[in-house]
Amino acid sequence: MKVKVSRKAHFNAAHRLYRPDWSFEKNESVFGKCNNPKYHGHNYDLIVSVEGEIDQETGYVMDMKVLKDLIKSEVEDALDHKNLNEDVEEFKNLNPTAENIAVVIWNKLREHIDKSKRLEIVLYETPRNFVTYSG
Image 1 (cartoon, rainbow, N blue to C red):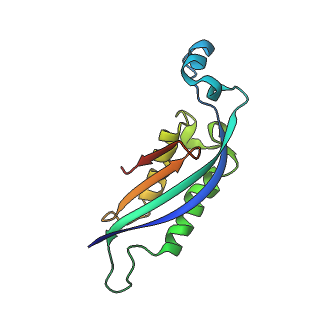
Image 2: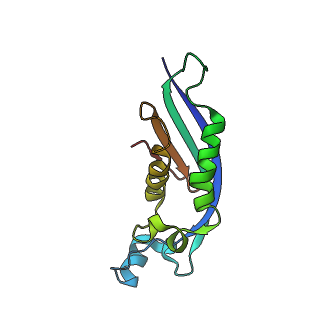
């Protein structure tokens, strides 16, 4: 029997959506206000879900304290109150769209979670705009 457990987290970060190989005008037409050269920020909400078999010994799919600590060390410490474009290595050459942020978070967590378990990331950039990525 597969069960999915989830943990919600939150972080704040600034970013700018643009491609350095495009003109300012093209960036402006594609990314609009998100191309602001002085950056803009979001209060991101994150839901990390792990799905798998219930361990018969512990009764857990995954220890939620372990998941909480992983999210803190791999996501919150790395992204909270950061300028994603300037402060986060993964975005030095990657446009920090919500889609790319979700994939980066998934990759950061995936290496720490048993491969037999399915990992899913839901990242809310605004209360109405969100991205789901599960590998």
